Image (cartoon, rainbow, N blue to C red):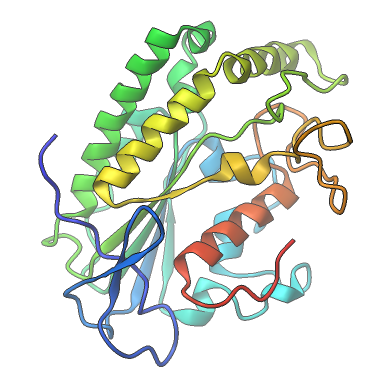
Length: 295
């Protein structure tokens, strides 16, 4: 991989009345000074990746990126005024995510974004599980998981390089990468009421988790994000205790104040509550303001 210029961050331009130099994200959530003027507006939100990125299975307008862009003030009054449209009215969204997308597909998605001369760009990316789609049991083979992770990282590097091109994106761009969550809560137990198709998928997902290979895959994503100054959001940690063990008080991740399920009954996609929580995590990560409301 070639040495990359760090991506410009949204920090310092998202709040109205922001003064002083803008800032660039480090993988640890810290900030570095950047060269772009603070007056550069956020004008483009790009969604790349698979069906998780797309918000498959939730009602229109309730996927995490829809809420991030335009909050539903009736359903989520605590987020009134806390969306990207409120901070930057000129922003537009480009959702290129597709169910079944793998790393090579997401590279094509990214390269179809010609540029954004009008301002800054925020890219949110979810990809990884479909790397095992053609041979789902390969998720149980540590060597093959290592190989798939490295192949995906090559794709992520190509995506990063595309958005780091200042000729296409003179206002700068920041990439936000979601890691892989675990609907089995690390317990390896699928829910009882699943049809045959979902039970096979969930059983394999459980083995992926219990084998330690899911952790291994996420570790590769985290290392890449740290090396390339991407924002990695730990949705794996966030969702623990809200998978299919959410009602089990014996689970080490049990939330006694909020024993709620954040997944659909397909052992893969976040439900409406899960999408809301992903939106919350993204918002509280990219917007430099005190958190006023926590679950």
